[in-house]
Image (cartoon, rainbow, N blue to C red):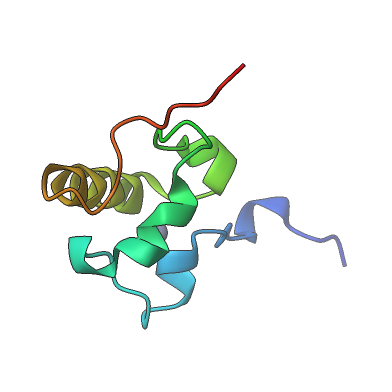
Length: 78
Ligand SMILES: [Zn+2]
């Protein structure tokens, strides 16, 4: 029987697969891993997060930045 490619569901988003992880600015230690070395928010393509959760993530990172829990930028010396 031929394997139907269309039926394959891509469930790479960690927030969709694990409902225990919740995106909140208070959970900034978790949000930290979605920032680059320079403090920018990583793209959804890199982190494999769905559009819905990427939007939520970006909002909570911005909230955490405003409360000085996360940096806006990180100074690196070249
Ligand atoms: Zn998701």
